[in-house]
Amino acid sequence: MLEALPITPEAFAPFGEVVETGGDFKLINEGCCRRYSDLATLDILDGQPGISLFQAEIRALPHDCTLMERHPLGSQCFIPMQNAEFLVIVAPDEGGQPGPPSAFIAGPGQGVNIGRNVWHGVLCPISGSGLFAVIDRIGAGANLEEVRLKTTLRIRRARPG
Image (cartoon, rainbow, N blue to C red; front, side, top):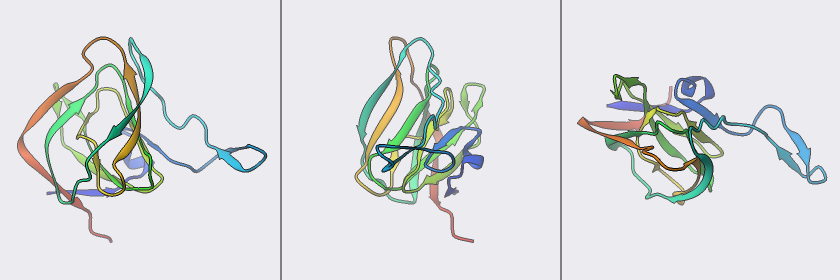
């Protein structure tokens, strides 16, 4: 059983970036809006960034992960369109296969930018509408590798404290 911890920029750094408000901002729109700029680094090879909408089914915890995927030609940024939680399962690459996994829960107001070539589970909202804006690579060429796990990975929310 793998426990999903609340996501933090430091804990998630080996896999990508947490996208959230905080830190420096610029006031715009007559002082009524804070702009937090350049929150994620898009890493795209031989293509262009595109914005898509994904409508994912809400999942329950504990969650059984049976498939991991990665994108060798571009990072993927997931931004929920509603203040909701979602499960993020990631693993380093070990010889073309997922290595030891980590699991995080992104909370309301948080998104993630999963790095290029980082193994990850499928989009897994656990509350809200399941609607996400996704910024990723659009272009020719194979940008998806999938691996069925030999053993089902069961993930639950970490217990507080």
